[in-house]
Length: 610
Image (cartoon, rainbow, N blue to C red; front, side, top):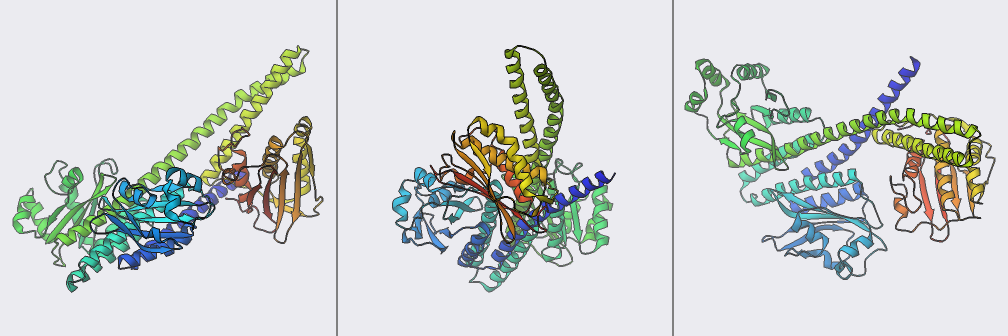
């Protein structure tokens, strides 16, 4: 029972940490979105986006280019760290020869992870960028799209090779989408600025949309997101708000939410809907918007319109009691699909909706569509991950029994007086089973790391004993290759908080990797040392070294380099070290060997897990 309680506690802690990481990403996006919402002009938005995003993405240079009227040229609106005058404008006439122009013309993001890749794809980039080019660099170019067209582009440059992971690409794409919406809002504001009343109305609409964007991006629970957005609309822009979704999202086609400032009227609307459910084939209303994806605007709702809509006298009386004066229904759209419909109704306030209000509502529908689509994609991804983990767990469990049977059979053969040929086959069987068993364990570890369930149990241990045990296991392999395997700097004279089995796994992976690369007659040295706040362990070989272009990838999963294997060992080693609260890195020069260095905290941070 105690073990089960510990498991539940561990699962709860892992879930909490996963939520904290998601909250951190969401908070970062909210902060930038909020800053964008406070900017008014296009120049201010460009400045805000670049200045805020540089730190968020770890870039050294950045800029926003906006398409000039006529669409032939894009001009730099704001840049940071840009030295080259040639970067101030880009012609957009196809074929677009450089990344910034290409991302606007094609409407597709571009991610380049090294200078070599950039110059291979765009030879002109050397001449265009002049002499201010670092030894290596990477960059992301993102189209700022609004209303189906690119109104500009943002670019962020890192002055080193950099691998853009999937979550970083998603973050940048969402950031670009928010910036594009902010720019669209700013252009609308600037166009209407001459008329004071129209400008004030545009500002109110922009403020509402900015607040809606912040709220819509704050959660990946799609139903909660839609409910919050509906409640935000009342009473800011409507007296009533309802969100309808198709059968695929809500069985029975029931609305996600109906809101009004008066709860009694909400109950009235719900009773009315239950008694008179909408006709899915109706020519107007939310069902028609769901079906066609076209908005509907009713600037005035006269009594004649209520009489035509009512199915009987009781329904007409209920509609008159609601007191409708104006309404608009807009689709919730994303990626060309209609995911729902938002109905905004004016009643007690006496509002009258017009084309500008409809445009604002349609923008709300687009932003809600992005949020809903992101939430659904997140749900699908989580289900896929859970499905993958379930399959992996089942397959791993089912493979264990036959593997154990094969291993037992091989052991029995090795004990008998069989021929040398049988013995060779039995030894080959044992080696194959061992490799398969290791792959299964590595895949399970990788799954735990991805799901945030990986945990270490750190206790004070003599690190020299752990190092000695790891070296003893690998000594036969070193002897076979005539490699001098040794430890230096022992004893440390101190116990270090660590998970003994997991640290043996780290050392086995690192030392085993070094033995693969070290030449016959070479050396592999494990060298621990004490620092003020941590213990540092080096694993050094005198092999051929790692090329500079490959060094940033050595900890990537499934990256094998030249040594073969599964490509998981170093990635898992990094996960274990980081779960202890430490860090790991690789240092290498071609022809001068490789050194892997990892640290472990000497204090209470070790073993926090993740």
